[in-house]
Length: 263
Length: 276
Image: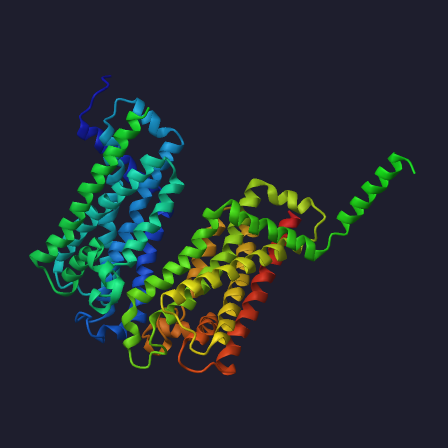
């Protein structure tokens, strides 16, 4: 029997990716909250704020549900993205990470493989929300192309947030610290236009929402839902998470280098 | 009397004192232990203050425009969302006691507590007192910070009474519910159930908008959810309509009912725990 001791970087990363995807599949309890809570909030908002859609500054929508989809998708992806990072921190806590490092595995493959599970989940999550809400009156003006753009945007956003949380996991080596950092992401979500349009806000909230990249990302998703497929909406849906991912993946790889250098 | 006699008498007195431990001192002792943990483990308490403050401010900023809907009972969005933050924070102060009890159960400390001659009931009343003290702190801090962000009592300081009544009452409900679940599950599975059920109970009400603005399924659920009366009670002092007894008694009755049921749930759970 021949044992390939030095498979390619791609093959190693693929194996690590497979492991992280299987981990999500085998532990559904970890991911169910990130599916249920955004749907619950979307349902709650649709019933609570249906009359608010006639307020000045609110975009023309058939129902609040059309408006709420973008917020639900981004909220769900943000929730779900911490799962992979928490698992990475657990690997560090229980020593499995050290065993990986002592094997001839590429360093970047360990991190990127871990994020891959979150990316696959982010894309599927986006499609899941759309498909679940369609029978409840959701209409996607962007059609199938819009849905695919949203799925791609959800996948890249999962990478961006997952990488940020992985950096936290590598830096602290504590799953508790990763969970503790999550409220910061949640705060960023609330001070954005995820749940109400920026045009209806005033004062400091409006200014915070204006400079918050999540607002512009959410509005890309929202335009695909309520206005239709346009280059501007597709670019915002994909390029903003891509820019965020470029920063956070670099950050997580540098954090890994620093951790290894400190040994 | 010899030194040995004196020592024996002292030991006997000490034994008798311990055996005569009354409910109140034992409860106060357990409450003190819980409150001391605020300074020793601030990371466990600070979020329960920060979360309602953040919620009140974020909701009032995000959903600022809803006050423009004709008939909305206040012209300040923070007046609408501050009491919700208080109810949420006070509830989680109560549920936090449930989390601490799970830790004690898992770590074996609870078995040692049950071996002491302290009255069984103090294992419920002690944490209850602690939750009330924590909820009072949360309510006061959220009110002060909310006031800095523009919240106003529309009917004078009297409006604080229903706010504190709701806050303390919800903390008692959270304690009963948290302890009852902790005694039954004895592990962290109970924590998820505590949070989820409490969350649902709070949000299936007029938490976000008044009943007349709602449409669809939530309106029907809110009409039959008795907890909605508690949310209404908490807001009495912050809304434009005058505070009347008609608007007050429903909330008080709902609080009494929920507190009685959840504390009974906790008492039965404790009895079952003692039988094992």
